[in-house]
Every structure is written in C-alpha cells, then in structure tokens.
Image (cartoon, rainbow, N blue to C red; front, top):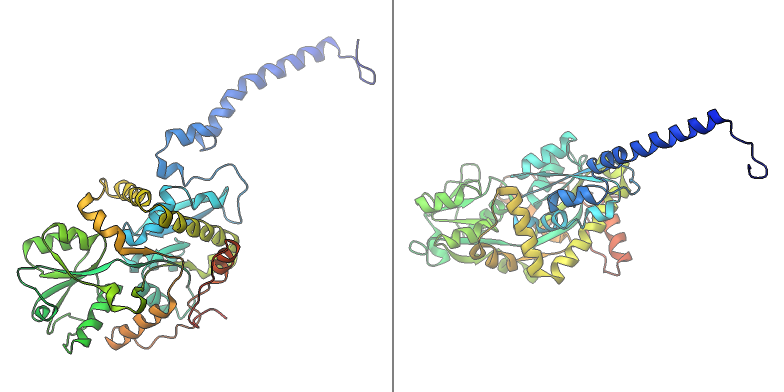
Length: 383
C-alpha cells in the first residue's frame, strides 16, 4: 500500500527506478576513484611524497585565486619557504587554493618571473628586492614580510689568510655582481680604505663573482682564496678546509640584518589580498614552529633540499650552518635602507627612491591577531 499522500508506482516506474539505482551504484566507485586521482581524499595524500601532497589544496573552499605561485631558493636562508612547504604549514592556511612552488637559483631570475607575471609571491634577498623595485619605478613589487637574518660568513684558506688584513691582494668570491653579499663585501673593503672597481671586481682585493654551486670547486682548485657567501655555501667551504674569518652578523648593530624578504606582485596583492594574508598566516606559523623546534625544522629543511637536489646536506655542513640563521617575521627595514646606501656608495646603483617598497599592513594584521608585536617599515611603507 502506498503511504498517505503518495501516488502508487506503476510496474514500469518500479523497473525504471531499480535500473537507475543499479547505474548509480555502479558509477559510485568510478566517481570515488576520479576524485582520488584529482588529489581529493586520503588515498592521494598517502600515495604522494610528503612535500608534494602537503601543498595540494584540500576540498575546502577556495579563496579568491585558484592557485598561488610561490618562488624561493634552495638555500638555508630561505628556511621559511623550505619548511613551510615541506610541512604543509602554508598550504594549511590556503584551504582550497593550491600552492605552485617554483625554485630559483638567483635573484634576477626570480624578479624577472615576478615582473613577467609568472610568479605571485617570492622569498628573496634585499638587493634584488631593491633593484626590482627601482627598475620598475616602484610599480611591480612590495616587500610584505621578513623571513631571515644573518647566515653570511667570510670564509678563507687558512694557509694563505690568517687575519683580515691578509685579504689585500687575494681573490675572494661573492655570488653575483650587485647581490646582497657582493654589496656587503664591497662596503667592507671600502671601510678598510682599499679600492675595488665595482664593475670588474679588480683592485686591492680581487672580487670574483662566482655562482654558489661552483664556489666549492673553485676553492678546492685554488682559483679563489676565500668567499663572502651565505649558508650553506659557507659551511660547505669549511668542510673542505676553509676557516671562518668573519661572521657578517658581527658587523651589524644588534647583530641583525635582513638576508631574506617575502615580496609580492603589486597586481596580485591588489586582486587577491585574502590569498596573500593566508600565505602570511602560514609563514608566521612556520617561523614560530621553526623557532620552537629547531632540530625538527633543520631536518625538515634538509628533507626539502634533498628533494630539490637529490641528496641532503651532510651533518658537518648543516649542523654549523643552521644556528647562524635567525628566522624572523620582521623585515628589519632599517637594515635594507643601509644596504641600499652601500650599493649607492659602491656605485652599483643610483640613489634609489624606496618610498613605498614595504606594505606590512597584512603582516601586522596577522601578527596582531596572533598576539605578536607589530613590525616597522622604517618610514618606507606604501601610502
């Protein structure tokens, strides 16, 4: 008997209903399989490498952009990116918006990607940030957070160089003309009263611009006598027989100076502030986790470097390198201003107008909501 208020089915309608039920039941496994292959559900997470699965969006609500393209270097000074991606701490804040990570070996190529529209957010050093901002006349990027301080050392062949005065007449490598370490070394040379042509690198000290990947081999072969370089290159050289002659941290007031910033395309910031804020929530939580769990964080960063380069850093390299880097949300804006003055003094750039290079609005919003102190843009904030 049909229930009250319903109409009895005809035999044909009963057969049709049963057929539909069979089709639906048969399609269900196919649908589940399709969803799993698209990265939804636990099976996809189980089958993918941790660092890949950690940065694939879940089925949650997307923010205003379907994906965010994040650039970084495979350097320990980019630990926020390495650990945040490896552990999925940034992705966790993005809900259904997917991270598309991109690895770079030099600042200019990352700036080019940002300016060309193929990158949205990047981890990068202060000198490329300044150069990119100035060349675009302030139109293409903003610094939205700090990431790291320190992690730069002058390492030398101890058989040839025993004191800082012994550097005169020697060949010392920096990663690239006009990069952060190159600018710092040229400034240090000038403060010693020595002269070096900033373009050729020739002078009282020979400044040899050498890719960090090549520097250890150049040191072994004797074509350079030392290097002013970031980690882990400095500790790689030490493992090959070099000695630390100077830690750049000791040259700065409060022993702090920016080595890594987080930058964003102004277009992406304007169109997708919710995505940028979510990324910053992720980086702030990543930095907090790194500082609370230094040994686990070191292992996580090394796992990401292994995924990038095929093998992890040896303990004799990463163990001394890791504690020399301070992870921080503060962009240490006053030190960026100092570094720009050094570049002007070295005649690598003309006096830049850096007004507006920072926009720390979203970072300070995130910090405030997390009960952390806000940070300063040293008067260089966007109006």
